[in-house]
Image 1 (tube, helix red, strand yellow):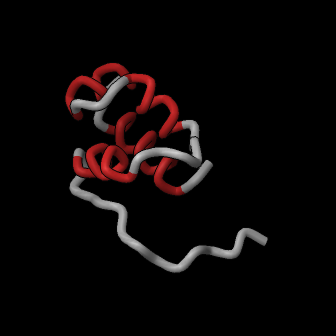
Image 2: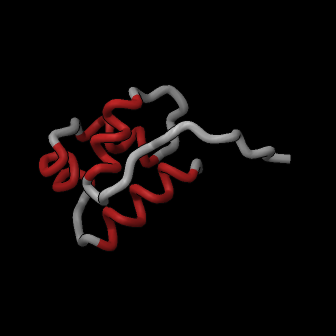
Length: 68
């Protein structure tokens, strides 16, 4: 699972929200939230930032980590 997926899932659970409640509060679709938390590689960054904004965060460019 990627870092963003892990972060969103952890923060959502810490806030006591189901995926459905999170989707409603963030204005995102439930399918998107599920795919995001599952680490889908092809997601829209504007929607990722909408999800992250719920926790005062945003995705920014950075160096790719070596997964070896």
